[in-house]
Length: 264
View 1 (cartoon, rainbow, N blue to C red):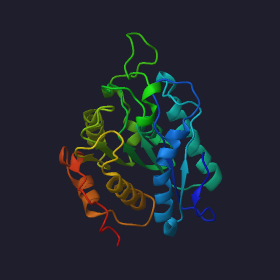
View 2: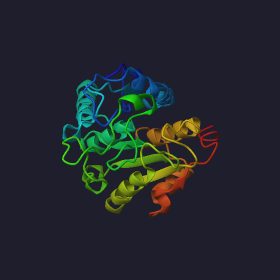
View 3: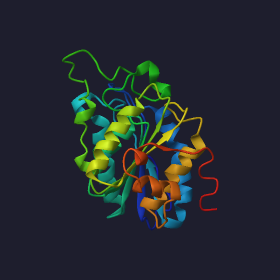
View 4: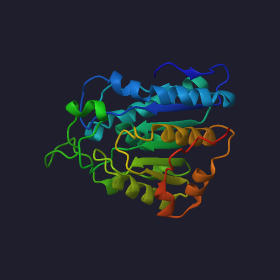
């Protein structure tokens, strides 16, 4: 894990940030992908100082998901174990982007995990290459040739049992051409049928990196983290999203300017 951000003397909650990656690669981790989530790690550490929250960026052994090996998910599970070793019995929020979001969803079954935030998750069936914007040259398509051992399972086979009892937030840009937003909707819908603690926000007209509404996405992430790990109430939009039945609670629009009036 990367170095801790936040107050380490009395930790009451930990956010593990899981960067993007590629569908298949045994290359070492991408410093660029890790750097992309650093601003959010710093923001959450600052915002959660009063709640004794700490953030860590997870550095993968390999840059790829790598089929059945699911290396990034295994690294996420290791990181949660490491949190327990370092800090004891504290709640953990897994916050992933792209391939890291899929890793977060898969690792959610760890007993210490209470919340998952999946930003533009890469899921089986994505129409374009997996990986964040900086990794396009190294990515392979999410499918692969018939019989390829690295080919992901169909989206319908993505596990959801491990999400039970967790609060789960999906965020996806409607114009994402790298990871299909409809796949995250379908997964959220399946999970919502099993457990009410699931919601999903759509960022209209934004793409894979959610860069056009970066501040709103960061504010939503802060709202979610402080509400799940800290002693803070959710904002009204997030409360409504969790309470609304499908499909309303899974197609909540992230309003422009979200966060400007939250918590002063």
